[in-house]
Image (cartoon, rainbow, N blue to C red; front, side, top):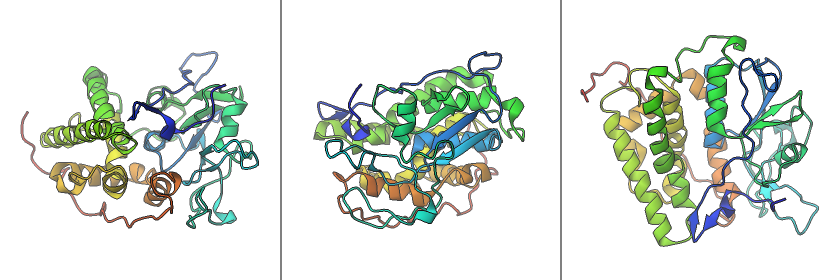
Length: 342
């Protein structure tokens, strides 16, 4: 088995290289192995993680709160084997509010446990234990995790596939009809191309800048980030959403990074050439998305800032959490304005 590790360890030549997710089974209508059955699956997620928050947003939009149960980890990484002096891995733990605040792994800070939960399936202390139940061999204990209660194993831990399964396979068990078509067939080919550009330049780009260990790797990452932001700013001059007049999953993919940008990535990942609130279209789009009640319920700014600033001692040893100044409640005109033609 590979040694336990985190995203901070995924470096090659000073550049951040993300490891692919290990569990890639597919829930599908008509499947005998993993059918889309209400009550069978459990989502392990974090309000802090942009990848997990994709899943939380689509779960909300699809009305799957009753069909797919949920556990939320604490935002601050903790030692996952505190009794083993040789195992220094820090990662996601369960710690409900009633247990009070925690400190960082360096013993600093007093981080609230508000909105975190216990492990509702097994009562485990760490997400690592959920992976070990599933005979994981990769050693990267990331969120999101979609767990099958019947087979007692992880089905999938790749967020892009989980949101597609939620949107395409679970419609018949949703309590409410989804207000939008997240994967419109007539736009799907273009959407895949746009998603890849957003992933490389923005979603993963901020991490390539923030976790870089050489100047060259940092500059490559940060330049890709701002080239992508400029491209999105121009695209959003032409339509309310990235793919047109209606929200799609592409908007959610972009949103989860944009909402973290000013409060976290500008300072913490050194993506400080420009803030989102300096882009008129991007800032309006960000507020439009946040003010959607389904998206808002999947967004927890307290968890977001607490995680980044208290979980990585090499970047912020004393776990000091800066103030968050971006106002997402300001009115916007995205629904009523006239857009430029392409």
